[in-house]
Length: 326
Image 1 (cartoon, rainbow, N blue to C red):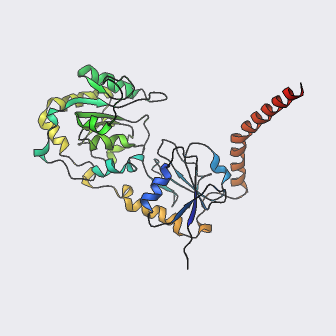
Image 2 (tube, rainbow, N blue to C red):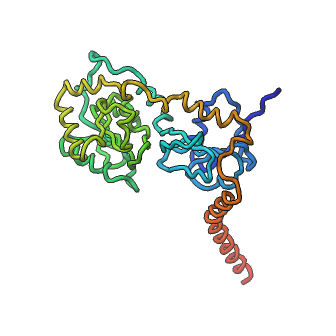
């Protein structure tokens, strides 16, 4: 029997290839997918960049690296930052997992003492370009650390390196510490910032997921959520900076708590979650409410999204017609 390809549409995803497409290619390489934009696609991978997903009737899978929670009235499944236990419908897949090279560094053994040369590095660096709709803590940490020693800012924000840096990893490698602050704080929301600092051999100064200490070893980095204030966290950075033996000890610590990657972050977990979706009969893969009330809810969202656009179009068309008759 010829095995048919799974027909998949990617909508509301923004850039190409999308986050969702990279996830499928990495975690389900054995499955044949046919990418289509037809509205009758069997599966619809969607993100947070619009509501076009409402035009598709297939099995909907929300995949998002941003701090946006899924709406399970719209989506059958979700792979995002929320650590929700919801039958077989949700999987915690923080953005840190998608940055493969950086994340895989976290799985390696601690640095051997004789390879540590960090004492010769500059103090601290920061790569940030956008403070719009961003947490004020990202500015506060820079100001407090910079009051102690010069913090090199390699992004567009407060750049003091002669222009935005081209190679973030190489830039961070020249520093003992790297500020790794998320744009906001929410449980489960961990992006690439933490892993990229670790990959560079810098000690991450982290703020974002308040529960990061449940999975990552706070002895290996400065977990700002473990301190009563950012001022106290900065005091801890200064203490490590002034104490070479304390600095070496942090570099020798494993990244994961207990030295083991949590089961819910393992590749096998992601693979099994996706395999369950795509290998069961398509008709049984739906999970969202498709009864009268579920469809009514979707229609209300659709009208709220597209009616203003249609009204604008009709008004514009009427103005054009009126001019033509003058």
